Image (cartoon, rainbow, N blue to C red; front, side, top):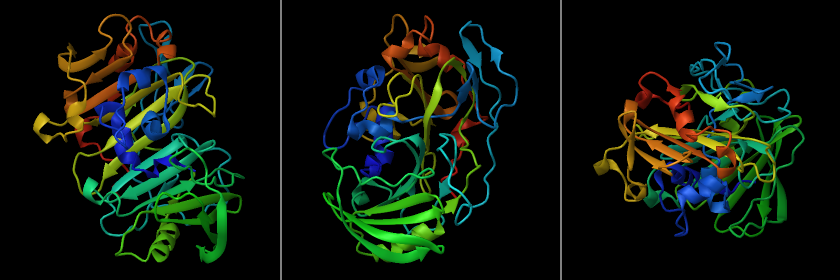
Length: 393
């Protein structure tokens, strides 16, 4: 099961904004990202990011999105990814699938919310390896916008690949709850469903599990106390309205990238607010020699989000490192300033902030300029500040 129910949307911001992590723990962004260490509360942030790319035989491609043959860039060990076409919004999806996917593609957009209670407007989607889960999953969550309401209620839905039984929730101390009780629930779209109770919940917790396919499980977890809702009725309605898709891909604000050979997709991560304009975040994590137990080592992270003027930033966002150089004429933060860059953060160009971070163990593959080469090989969509995520619908 996934840890990120403790406010993933806020956690992923740590990656590029340098904000304070939950429970008053302050994250050294440079150190944590460069060493590839992903602590439990930092997990989703770490996963921050996967644009996509299925790299095969040393050629970086975007599954189903390759427009042109890969062309070598100026650096002999780099390959340019073909044009990435942003997908138009597709249908809301199916109530059930004829069969569960054998594995979760990090670029797959497997599920969407069909109905949510009023006010649950901040949404996040992640696919691939997710901290707190065993193996790859697809994860969708929603909470009320604004920190003042963050404990009122939040809901997450996790879709598991073929033959995988949902994990017990991982608790704050990293232990997993043990099953206390199982009760039959009303079927979800004519598929068998159960209410599951686990030990160790940090607060009010309601869990509904059902078959989204004959060989696949989905699990909904509602946390918090929203007195305006009948939680079980709400959970069942949300589950019954989930739209499923086994072929749709996640649209992202990056069209093209030059990437080192040998990288494989780890996870894709997007968040957005239905009501707050220009509040989206999109990221991709790529890694080498992926170990399912530690998928976020040896990784390269690329994230994009709208640029904010200083007066529009939150107090936490102002904790981000100040620019210490310029890149392509734009204010930027580079670390270190000399030698291969492990972190590059460039703001304002095109109305967005682009953040590229690599673990120290990966720098040797990136050439003498480190992640600066990766940044300079990125091509964003036209008018990237106006990009809209599929979570709005």
